[in-house]
Length: 498
Image 1: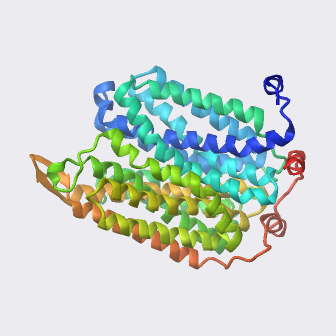
Image 2 (image 1 turned 120 degrees about the vertical axis):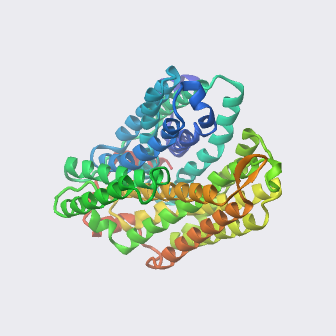
Image 3 (image 1 turned 135 degrees about the vertical axis):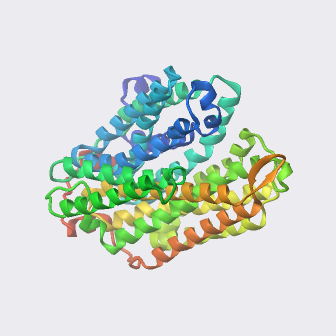
């Protein structure tokens, strides 16, 4: 391949089709990095921007809210109007959000930029859907494994990278870097990734989208802000009650509209419902690993258990787990291909639970803490490979992006619940040392037990799933379910060149 071919875009089809998965996985990793980008910066935001501590916390909360709302919505838009088109729009929004954060120190602008970055979480399910549409069957499972793992990989590498930038450079640098990565993603997708001709029939459901947004924002605000507002306060209970009421009306409407934003009948199938329940518990268990590890090793040695590590060192503790997720993605795909994704998800849940058992007994040594965190990450890699494979077996091919968007949403809800539980546990089980209040070691051990319990709950949901049936494929499921499958010229080309 000559440099002229590269510059002119005339890359041979064979080589180009081989680049689709790496490009999509890179996009997913960049989006995941954005989710953890500001974590090392949060303690310094009030002095850097003049904002309150509560306002600074919204730099994390707002990405959770916008990611939760836009992930299923943009998945549905991609199914209707073109997945590559929506993928490019998501990456454009991410780049714009990064630029807003890079050019301003005003907390309002920063929160707006972070909201735009959070909306780009839809890149993950859109990428999975493109892989399903464009690649030959034998490459789908390993490619989805890598794409799914990019969420964990980005989270693992984002924290130490952001910590290094925060300690050594002007804090705006990381947003300039993220804007550059977003622009690179845009160019790579334009050059490499084809548009799928697989479409859903119907029109975009505006009332359903607004109702879904109200429900998700209300529920997630209750979960994330309940500890600050008071779990029994009028605001918390009122918001939760209003969210439930709107949710019931939204469900009634969605069951009667001909083109819903979320097909509740498909979502209620045991194979889909139980997979999403498992995704919620997997998201909870995974996020506890990320939340607790950095804080545990940073606790001062005066606590009797803390290691007094720096922000950079604490972030690096998660890096082996991210590398393990990359290395394990082919293995996790092989488990799903050989024994079925249900078996793979069950194995993943057991591995995650065992990882927390390791963590429970090894919380005084840095290397053993890293080992336990890595075991949990290995289980997460297998789970993140199996979940979309289970979803695709149970939904029509024309609803892949929206169904995977819902599954990604459930992982996000699990992460939000985990954050609330971890904050509550570490804030309540404390002692005073050197004049400051710190969580006790028992608080961290309780978090490990809760996370292990979440993994076991995911195992129970997995075992209740219908058994894997060899020879069953998603395309035939889609045909039986009435899904619309339009032959894609790109698919034919990709399969011919693979």
